[in-house]
Length: 310
Image (cartoon, rainbow, N blue to C red; front, side):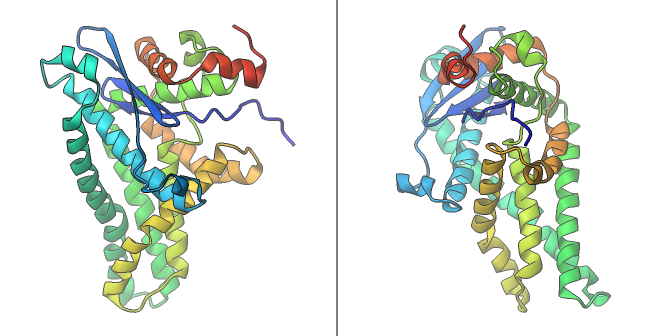
């Protein structure tokens, strides 16, 4: 068996506007490059959406709440970073971090985003696939057509947004986030030089998770069939938590394993990350390092996992 050269760190993050959010357990940081060139970093604790703490430890159930938490925290920190470029009251934000306003806005944004995502990636492919029913009688073939349409829409969506100027910079920060995590998980100190030469692809990326959501939905809808057209739509919506739960377990396993099956399953998501990540510059890498340093003792991690003493 091939020996692994990387170790699981447990940290994850997300690119925001001119910055990086990094999360380690219940703590998260947001490092943003301000218009004046300074780096502002705020750190807070995040309380999970799950009503009971134990739910986050139950396989398949935890994936549902982890997905919701990712949406809420991601939207909140994205709105927070954007506010530096929309308002003049930067001094207050430097001190306070994400406030009540960002949390309310993020809650509304999450709801709207979920409705949009369900309509675009779940319902639209279903309705498109129904057009071929006059020529195809097999429900299995129809389900496969729906799955292919869903994958095509997902890939086209990534291609289109990757062409937007502002999104390109976000994707560069996304690359910096991945590079930082890969750097320390491969036993290297967090320096600009080490981060720059690290890979910008990571198996625990949200892009890979979304691919698994699409892939798992294709498989489930091939086997789960309902005769009534209205119920077909209802079933697709009701199965979303199940799909999210299964997808989370796959990507969680991918972060801890490197066997042949996991590498095969992870390959499409890693390829899609070539669209959602870009090579960052040194200033972006510096922001990512600041975000990691705020919530993660990477020096202690390197010492414990790799016997590396700084």
